[in-house]
Amino acid sequence: MITSKQRAYLRGLANSLETIFQIGKGGITEELASQVLNALNARELIKLHVLETCEYTAREAADGLSEVLGADVVSVVGNRFVLFRPSDNEKKRKIDLSLL
Image (cartoon, rainbow, N blue to C red; front, side):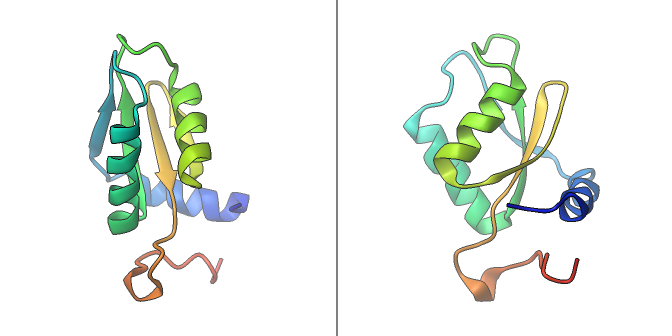
């Protein structure tokens, strides 16, 4: 669980991120969850977009994926949301929240 100060810091970092995943009418599948997990392990902070054809709202998709992947929801704005999960490998960690 991240603190509000850490969440604010991560939101600032996420502003410049490009959306790397779209969730459409297929919804949240095991394949999507696997790809998102791989991206989180590599980047730690990712932005996703929920299309209008999706059966989930951005909040529902963010909560569902975060629960399955053990990630934290940083923000949900409109149809986009940001997830954060520290890398499993300590040497690959890019974002250090311990200082905040």
